[in-house]
Length: 201
Image (cartoon, rainbow, N blue to C red; front, side, top):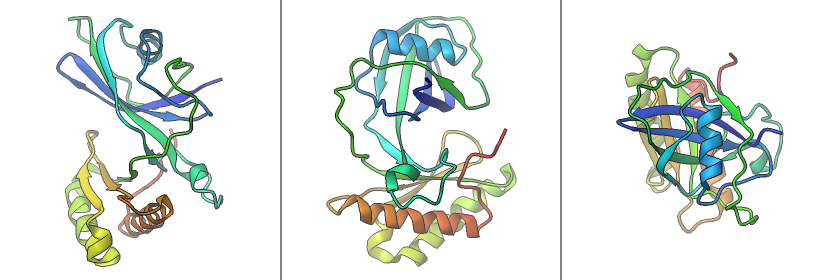
């Protein structure tokens, strides 16, 4: 059974950066050599790595297709930012689509993680709209959330063209407060014509 969806991949010199979103109960720890090899192979890359790092998890609803659940974890899926230093000097090409992997991380402790942030992904209708969308989201977040909440919602370009990320951090408040804030940001993004779910195909 598939364990993670791999997406938002880019190359940074000899390193590949990508998101891994849990689509089963399996989460991530520090990663193992076998896990990284499988991720690279499933992503269509040479499976030898010289080093890697895995971020603390955040949660995003970008891959979710079920908006009806009242349980926030059903809508906001744990995701990790992985950086892998490739051991090859050969040119590589990244897939331009989401890829599911069967990779399993034996370094995971088995304990359920709490995300350090909720990240709303807003996809512009086209590349020309992306710059305007970021400005509109920044202004809209400040207006819709108010000064206190807006301080915990950071708007930035994603590393993939056309995607804007709004990172909502709970701080010392309950995760439910961050979820409510992220839900408002999603509503705002949609009102501005952005998609907040991965487009089919």
